[in-house]
Image (cartoon, rainbow, N blue to C red):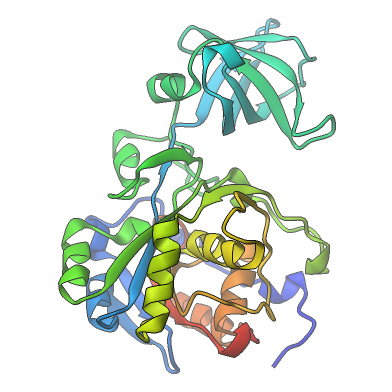
Length: 352
């Protein structure tokens, strides 16, 4: 058992051909690695309802991915790309303000007006959330959500190499997406279709939701070898009172809380740690974390040396996770956002 884990401990070699570039032919046609015990069991995702028990509580993230990638040009003619991370004020009275990542050869000065593809403008106001902040503060000329819907592109992850298509608009979105605001999908939930959800309900598995708007920071690389030096990005989230009550009821009847995706883990454990009024979280879950809510985790396979590798290692144990990843690579599972899924069980206190 390793102690004092470093960034390099979460590295592994992944053949490029195992990075899924497109989703499975049908949502629930993915494979499912049952990693609750050892040895792991190779299954299909459609078997999930048979792996859960009546009285368990399935918690889903109902965020909706927005077409947050916008293109345009500076007054000099140079091209730029914006990725809207957060809508700050959607109304005209408040200036249609957004916080965004900006990709451009030379950064424009505050006050510069960008002509965006589609005929609208984006005026640079400065940095966000402060003068040296990591994002840029823009005022758009119209409602941000309407502009993204009309002129935006699906913000596919950097490891997906094709440009977004109509198929991505459909498949890089869950079937229960409700609240717009995410720039990355809660990918473990992409496997669910109405048939699987209906079977879960018929088997007595309860259902609740949280909303966590996944930010582009989920793809931010960890650069510090001492992982304690890494600063996590903030993400907006909400755990409704009805969900808190459903969790309490589940625990009382001896059921298990099943988080669908690391985003649900972050939301549920943030609410438990910081209180139900918390609405922004930069919780960093690493081995040794004391989990208070989640008992089972359904998740996809994550990037090497990522904060999500650290989270799943905290949840199910470092050595166990690394063994599961070796198995998944050997058995040719598909990785990352459009890839296959894995079911994990929490270790005692999340100890590695």
